[in-house]
Length: 263
View 1 (spheres, rainbow, N blue to C red):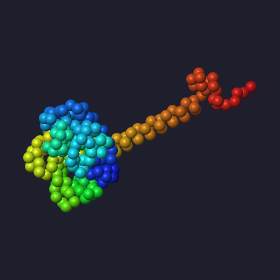
View 2: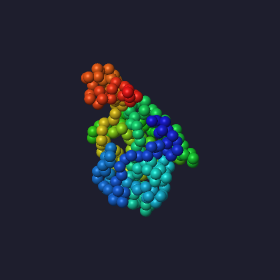
View 3: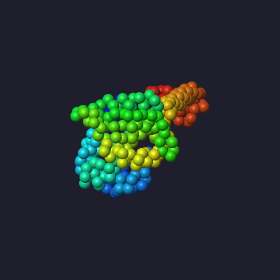
View 4: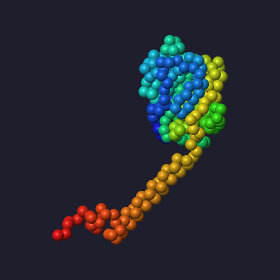
């Protein structure tokens, strides 16, 4: 729920409270082309791959809202030119993915809460994120409904240090944030590539519409109630049947099964 999101964002910025349930590729294998995960897929540039948990400590100068300790604990998943990062430090763009349950309805009310969640927390050093634009729209070839945000990170003096194009959407019972990001001094060069990656996004299922989960739970409760009532009625009927119409085992036990025997 949004309360869990607020707690997590207040602690680390981008990371979420629930550990990501996204299946990971083998981080030792450099990847290019189509990256297919459990509930989402996107086209990654050549040489991009997932940053392994054990590799997070080897990357210098990570953005303030993607701290190494969260990457090591799998609170988020980071994709990018990992081998370059390990050699030269964080640069060249990245895709940060966070996922948690339950799935939220992607509507204006949730979009307003999401904006507040993004902008409320600051780090201990005074760094913060600012949402420059937010809209309900669609993403990818399947026109998947999503909240699209343009975001920048600022230091304590308000200087822009990085920018990102963030996609928030629901699929398969999960809520996802996919953040396509780069340092401010690289953004002009990398923005077209990052937006092309975002435009290639596909998802396993359409977002859940408002009321679908509640309706499903209500239907299950009604069915369960009917089933229990039917069992009780059947039990009452069998107990009231004449002894000669009961099964042999019941006739042998007598009407008061388990009581003291008559001699």
